[in-house]
Image (cartoon, rainbow, N blue to C red; front, top):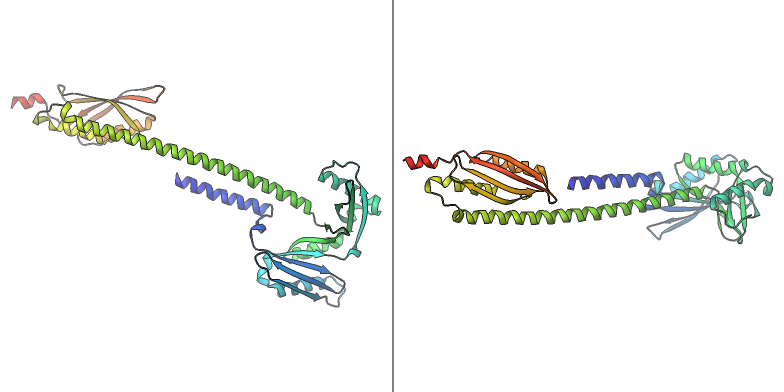
Length: 353
């Protein structure tokens, strides 16, 4: 049972780790170093913050006198060297671009009860009307400006995609690229709403798994407690039965000296009863040869009865142990056994001496 529970929790941990990696949530459980970058024409200004330390690092990296995009790659590599190349996998980048690279316009919503997905579709369909540009040429984000108005901000799609490709090539984690709107709201041109929806789905799934595991653990604990309690009471009953049989044997059976093996046989029977089997009758007829003992009892499982038969057959004093009858009632299985000895001598032979 313990190995089954252990393997179950191992599989559960592996499954949760897979879910976290799939939805990108594993980074929330590791230390993070946030790097905020402000881009300008000739340099990038940066500021770092580590989640498990109060230490911050500020500075700037000048761009090379080069009109190509290589200057940005060089500047990013210089920044990583300044921060610490060993911490590369913990870095999260937040890039603020120049507002001159963006355009902004207000959009009136047709209905204040639109969902987030419907608002995104409506804003995307309104790009051409507001900016006279194709939605395929730009990326956009929006913020609320009043109850029924949106502030739509756009940026050239190829510009944002070049930054995404640059960070992907350097294997860096880009979390944000955008700016602050005039009303101090964050405008992010990355598909952060889709990522947020995936995280919320993953969080809901994790909560459901946690509740399921808690319920299963509680049920398992109650089941184990019930099993242990039933085993304890069954063992107590069997022990009492053994004690009664042992104490009453000398009083209930008047054995001559030549038949002391019978006493040993009955004592052996009292020691072979499994804890899951209860006895209701033990009948011994000393006049028969070989002496026969009939035992009646009950059990909840057929396997326990067969185990009892095997235990009896393995005893050196017992010749045969057979099942006479097994019946089922509302309590469980009622059984009747017939047992004969293989060492006891005939009382008539003893008298002939």
